[in-house]
Image 1: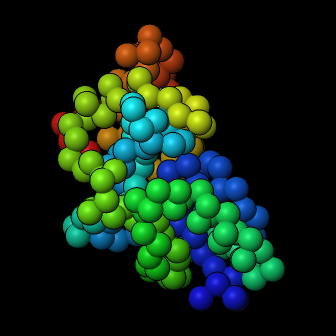
Image 2: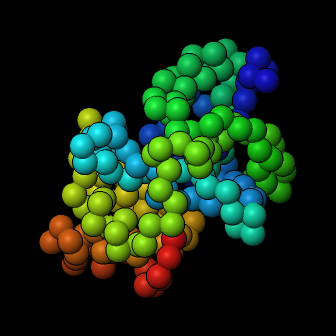
Image 3: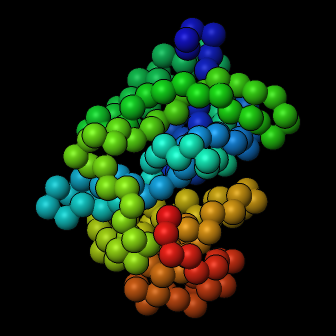
Length: 196
């Protein structure tokens, strides 16, 4: 399905660090899945002894997720797919799935999405936001602090005009836990929420 090029859906770090060449980029909506800090990170943003949290797409039939769709041209498809698999399938907690996206120009495309495997040991859906904030404020992995991952994702979503109340709340709360509350308050337009 990639020999003619392919679309990839970014909803977390792929938005601000795709890591592959792409010729087109659109804000896109995915139905039936939600962006959620529902995966324990034991590599990039935490360790096996002290896991962090990273975003995943989690099944939520009534929900939708706004993110970014990237188109990879055929000449880059093989290398891009290999790089994505090395990055995203490091512990097999994500499953590769193809889903329809609605682009901001109204067209529909089929895109590669990385969706959490709810049966995987790293799945942790349903954690209260306060618990998520405390984990993210503390954890650190081989790609740096878990808080940097949150702050980068929240900032880039905001710059794209994509609202995510849960991420905005987490951004402010984690900044407060780290003693950076003033900076977060100025950056975020968050409203307190009780669940992700």
